[in-house]
Image (cartoon, rainbow, N blue to C red; front, side):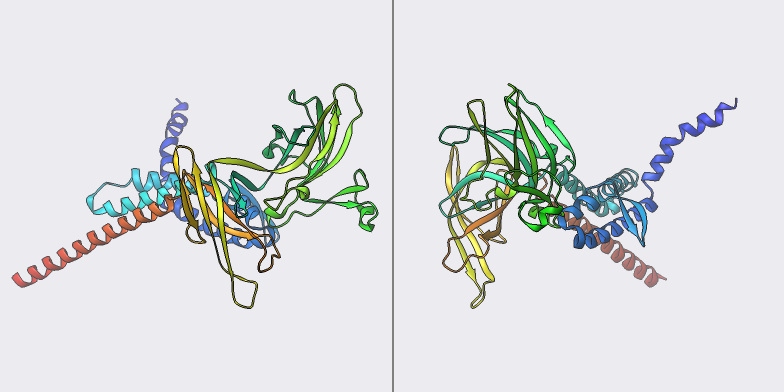
Length: 414
């Protein structure tokens, strides 16, 4: 008989959870916490940069923050958005009594849920990168802003690269600066040993005075000096000590890989660290992660205008041609506020280069390329929410007018 109250309490758990997640108080607390997280994230951009602030504050379930010197664990933006989505779905859609008078607010809540769902889809499934082209150049390859991967490329006698073996960026970025990692693969006749990976580094000659304070091996008169991570993650240049150990018992080969040897000008080719195992020439290098889009873009003309007397850009835009199999070629313009949208990809006019170019120099155009399944969801969410609020306003106006007319009629009869 003593178990009955306990069993009854356990059976009430679903009801208690339902009441908790449909509570208006929960929605209020979540909105207050979202305001706090937004404030901390905005201030955090000053010290950590935009990308790091987004990852810490808005793309996390929880994060640690010092408030007045006291470490505090706070819910991250991702967790708060999920809780708010559940609260609005259960409390504003399921629990609320359906009446025609509340149709407008119900529609508005659907719009807000769509906005929250779009944010989650963007976080989970979107990709972003860039494509840089000089006039006359064509490409269908997009490069990441921040993700670097290790590539081992067999080279022909003429130095032409064949298909590369790739150590992916997501795995490489998990390495600690003092970690040694041995990579074995049947695709290569040697083992790869990475002796520490620095997300931001620079090689310095051992003859430089600052080299005395740098630990690590000296290779070909250089040491790799880890640097403090840049606030803007796009500016980090990773580096690593690598060792290639032939499985046939040959002597190991050591080298320094540094992302600074990577091409930052679209016409320049990356400079790999080359070595020979057996009779085969190989190249090893750190390169940005890249992927292809299902069409090719050729830059026909880059228009760049400066303000008179100064170097500041007044306007820049690109005239391009899009090539696609089984489709006619399309000539179009990409401007700062007029992107190209096609096949789920959006090309924005982002920037130009090279830096320090003078009037008359040939310049390249750089496009930000985004693939976001929920690209237009915020727009449609705002339209739905606005329509819902408009309907609610009309219903309230009709009710007010009807009550006023009824009241005047009653007063006249009396």
